[in-house]
Image 1 (tube, rainbow over the protein chains, first blue to last red):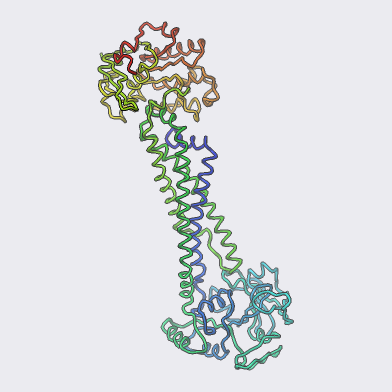
Image 2 (image 1 turned 30 degrees about the vertical axis):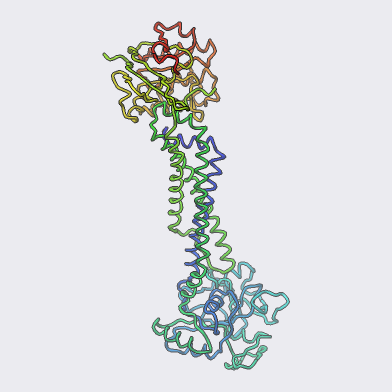
Length: 412
Length: 225
């Protein structure tokens, strides 16, 4: 009952403010460090978007990253368009499993409207399922809404929307064309949740849309039967039958002057993470420094109490406490302080990642698995406790050397 | 049978800030029989507290030997000496030296902890015996001076030590409380068959002892303290 930890805890209680401040600084440091590490892991996992159902993105010549960000993450501007013929070539290529065209350029209150085919809903067994209603009829002005769009805008089956021109919302730039919402998609935790899907043929016909597939400008103005030569798409999502064939096609496309291919998609994203890796390294270094500062608060907190505790230690020694007991009391104190800190740190970690996750979900549609187990969740606390115990050895040795007879003398 | 306390050739010196070696203790011989009591008197600075700390093993002598019931405190290893002190010696201080963050009961139990025999029931019994049954959960700051003295007494005697050392045990008490406290110390020592060594300046207290030793005569170092 009355062991080192009991004595240590009683001392911490009697210095409640100092205990709170010290453990709070540990909590902040530990929480921040775990959040930085876990965020990197989870962001990487989440943005890799496994089981996409396609392997590559074909689009206009230019940055592969921009192509991926635009076509899969629905971020950034489109690097340009490619002719419809290229889509048809890919679609009929025997080495290609699936080819889905995508046309972008309009939005509804900031949420992208993407023209595509019905295949987008069926190409992947883990793909987008309709929660309410049905998928669009490719011959009509119908729209299917992603889960985040429905949640944020309140759109429901039966509503009618008019697209706004451009990828950024401008209330003065609305098209006259109307679309009926016929379906609300289930949550996929991917960027697709932030998209409104419409038939690609209807996209071509939206008033003011200029098609340049033939090299000349063509405006459909509601005319459905558009010759293929005028059509163009922003990108094509391509699934290959085998990786060997994929490389052959990729090489062919990239050597031409019409289009470029981002393949494999995961590699392009990995390159992005590697390019911004230095930012994370800096953050890691900062969090380690904060950990050291937090450990220093443990040292200062215990060390500062040593003068007033000399008498306590001398009394304990006079009662028969061995010197090692004093070390054990101080280390217990550091242990309890750091334990309180890491418990607080786990709470702070949860708060930071929840907020970051909500932000990322709102901005990109990608869902971070905030409470997914990560090794840093035990490594971080363990390291923090060990550092605290190491720095606590300084006051512990001071306690060890307490001059008993000197400190037992009457003080007044 | 070995005496309770036997001291031979005990010497202790300190180095002063100017580098001089000052001898504080030089006690050629001192003995105390089992279950007996002695009062030690002496002028300030004759090394009374140093002498007690040497007996308890808190200080290490330069020379000489302290035997308690035949066990040589001076030749025990430090950890064994700590344990021996916890089990066999009860120390009562002038300023009580209670642990301020702990209750009366916890103060007594901490004393038991280092002797390796924590027994809450017994700690309560001893506190009841010194009249603090209703103050078990009080901290020292919440107790009167007399009550603090009784907690210190309970803590010193709870392990039923063979030797009780009291350094100015009534120095901080008024005459009435001093008499009560001393009576209690004697009673409990008698009950436990413990020997009692009291250092005091209190003439009334000293007059109650059959044996009174003057440390300035025992400690032949003279005025060098």
